[in-house]
Every structure is written in structure tokens, then in C-alpha cells.
Image 1 (cartoon, each protein chain N blue to C red):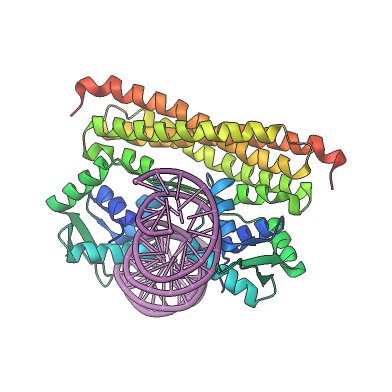
Image 2 (image 1 turned 45 degrees about the horizontal axis):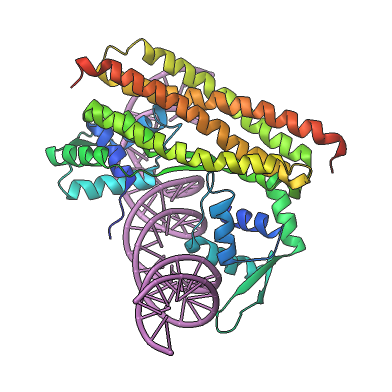
Length: 184
Length: 184
DNA sequence: AAACAGATATATCAAACTGATACATAAGGA
DNA sequence: TCCTTATGTATCAGTTTGATATATCTGTTT
């Protein structure tokens, strides 16, 4: 059975708002949805080719000067495929936290290494949270526009969970520090 | 450059506590760390073979009756590789939330579909949270044992973030419902 | 004007990972 | 005895990642 390729839906979702090139798609992914989804040229370009040889999208040459550029446009069939996916009840949500993996196996090394791992995570989350918050604030003011409600909710998910991460970091560090005296 | 294979570290981490077969490793992953990490036979077995032909683990035939069984044991070099990884400051934490993806592109369909997507997520999280909480409670009572502190902290991360998810679900549903009247 | 860095743009590849499938044995209950 | 479930290893097609290759254009510095 042909597995569902998630990048197809990301591309169709983005194209449902505007025509884009592969490069543009990468930028959109890296921008608005990067904190909960990633995409790489290595799967964007092949996906575009496949969908274009099917009926979901069409392409047009929009090269400027000597620089090649292909702009893609979603078809009616593409929009229907997107809707169908949106209506499917089955979803796969995957978390791969190397930080937690290291913490789980922390007993194999010293406590200070585990604490450092938490601090690295904390620093990263703090930095990302600043960006997410300002993005979220911007969206909150634009919520009259129908689409922005959806963008706001996803950004808001990021803010809420990142804040929960930081609280946990605090708790975890305190717990490990309190055990330090009797540690390895 | 040879990419780092994360499953290797998961396997070494598990083997640092006890000798295990490939099947056992899969069970351990599905048990204690499944909410933040996944593993499949398709990458566990090849990783075991590769590491065994290297110097990180050794194998021994522990077949019982007619049923084949290979048990793996971590070597000193394997323990050092694990420690080295634990001490590396660079980590990659990846979130792939199809639920958020669908919400982000929700404007392409009706509000009721988006609300339903949130409800499905909520139901799943609620079910998982019950298991995680009882797992977490058990670990809390065992924290005299050094290792259990680490297990508790990871489980606690799960509980804290899942609770944040549920709060967000509530907020998101209310926001979408309040806009329902003027919606599509 | 030349040199350079960085953004734009497409494309491909090896290695890693997923989810399914295949195959076989063992244990337990109906 | 039959059937289901658990144990156990293994492989495969398809998907994804992260790196690399190649080329053009733009803006800045020398």
C-alpha cells in the first residue's frame, strides 16, 4: 500500500493560499511552521515533481533572466486532496526529543552532564520562545482575518508548550541539584 | 561524513543497564520512552548487526528450544561511545505534529473539521496522560534508586507538557466555537 | 570595477527511519 | 485440536534527512 507522504499535504496547504516555487515553500516551512514541522529540499523537489506529473498541481516557468524558477499552482483536484486529508481522523504526532533521551540515560554519566543538557535545552527554548511570542502577538492583532485565527492557534500552542518546558527545566534542575551532594 | 545514527545511542543506553535482544529493545522503547522516542525493528536489527561487527557490542546465542534468540551485551568501547554522546552539547529535538499542521491549514475547510481535529488530539492526550501519570507516580516512590530520578524526570516532562496540551485544547476549542456564528 | 559574501534557485545522493510484511516457534485458552 | 497472541529475527519499499553540487543574482567592500 502506498504510504501517505506528509510533505505533499504541507505543499498543498501552502499552495492553497498562493502560488509558490520549491524554494519559496522551503522558506514558508522554515518560517511559520518550523517549530512543529520541518521540510528539506530533498523531499520538497521530488514531491513537487511527482504531484505535477499527477493532477494535484500545475507548473509554470517563471524564470527571471538566466535564473531558473518554477512556480507551482494548486488544481481543483489538489484542493480536494487537501480537504480529504484535513477530514481524515487519523493523525500521527511524533516527538523526538534527544534531550529527554540523554536525560533518561543520564545515569550512565555524571549529574553535572545531565544538568548541562537541561541548561542547553532551556537556553534554546528561551531563545525560540521570544520569537514565538512576538509572532503570536502579531497574529493576535490580525485575527479579524479568518485564516489568522488558525495561525494564531498554532503559534499559541508553541508558546504554551514552551512555557511548560521552561517550568519543567526549573523543576528538573532543582531536583538534580538537591541530589548533587550524594551523587557520583 | 557519516551521519550519527540515533538508534545506536538508544540501544547502547538500554544495554548499559542490562543485556537485551532486539525484540527486548523494541519492547523497552515502546514502554518507558515511547512518548518521546520511537524505534522500529527496521532500524533496530540493522543497527545491532552494525554495532556487533564493530566494537561497541557483543552477541551471544540464547536460543531456547527451536526459537532463535540473540542477546547483546555492551562493551567498554560501547559505554565510552554512550558517554561521549551524552557529553555532546548539540542536540536535535524534533516535533512533528500533524494535528497542528491540519489546524494551520484549517482555513481550507470548515471550522467544524478543525474543532474535530482538536478533539481527536485531546482524546488521545487524555488517554495517554492517564498512563503517564500512573507511571510517573510509581517512579516518584522509587526515587531513592539513583537511576529512577532520571526516569521520573522524563515521565514528569510528559505529564507537564500533556497537561499544557489539554489547556491549549480548551482554549482553542473555545476560540473556534466563539467564531462559529460568523464562520463558513 | 573587481572581488566577495550571501540570497535565490533547482537538483541529487547516501544514509537513516517508518511501517508493513514474511516467516517461524511457543504458550495459553476454547 | 484449533486459534489467538506473544516471542523472535529479518527484509523491503517508500519517505525523510542533511549534505553537497551547481549556477545566477544582488549588495557591499576594496
